[in-house]
Image 1: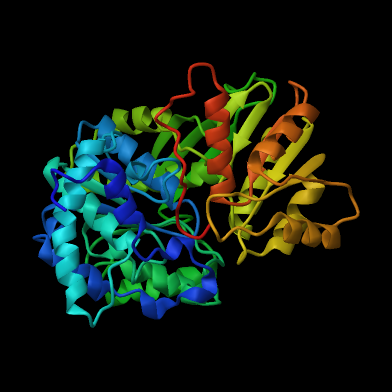
Image 2: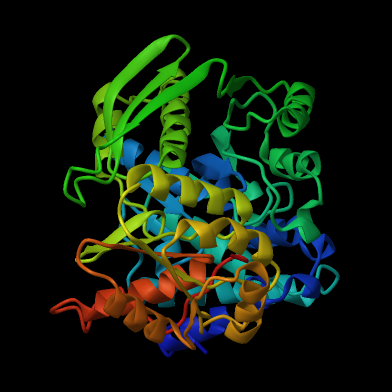
Length: 473
């Protein structure tokens, strides 16, 4: 089928029809299925678009998406044309690849897909590497888009791990590792040092690293790899530090969400940075993003200090401690492993210590469900457990409720769908209460779509879509 005959829906169906590890159970694939040679063959067939574009490459167990968005915002504020590649998308696939915040149009998606298909067929026909995957093709599509759009710099969020990730074929100006904790252990390893080594696979000889990992074991693993590759490190807790002061609960939301940040890099203070996002963990991410753009400035990029303030003040990170509405105050968070669940819980408790709190919770089959529930249930006054609907990796609500009954003697409510869960929570909440959504990217994304659709005039919003996919969350 030629580009002239290809429709947007057919283009999306073609992409979604590829092997998609994002929708498979953890035991259905392994590290052996991740082949960087296969990605290299596809990029070569496309003329290696990644070789002409410098990048900021960001890995980490949690925080890498927010850090990528913050980095892109500061570089855009500095006047650069910035390509941003993140995953997963919330409502539309195009969200994964933007240029100065703008995703490709439907016509551009058709054109990019048509251009890709010939190269995909060539690589698939080689046979020995196996068929190209959904994520590999989308990564190549992003590179094609960014080359077409003549971007100055690309900010890349790693999809999974680092060493074997499709994004690892790039030419970085700086790399970032945000954090290391246990997640995707069937692929990356069951210990923190093994996971750290996988993520440190993004390090390139002589290219500086901004490291937000402070726990000794994973930090030392990263340092060992950095030393073998002659990689200079700007280490959080050493050359880099930050202080964060959240806004007072007495300030009316959403103004009460966020806080003030001071970043200190190599002895230089950047004070009174307004950060609109909630939580000390977002301040951590903002400090790393700030260090990344400062490192680029040292390498010759024209980044005025004002761009740091402007970029961070204006950045938005959907479903990352996102205030989606204020009556009642409702916060969506993609927390899906124990490290991110703890960060979510601590941020909610420290920012809203006196408000009545309701939680809508759903999660994925391969997550530490019992541990997450043991942590969360005592911290909320009312809990509704449910299931997301648009990804087969969901933990069914009956299985989830069975785990919850083993964890607590407290009452909780069971809802069969996100819509039902929201209806229950909304009925029980006063306009002074707080409703939170957490446990998976997918539940946050599905409820975001529901809530946006309920806003006046939003019934036909382009933010809505029928399919939400993403890495195992």
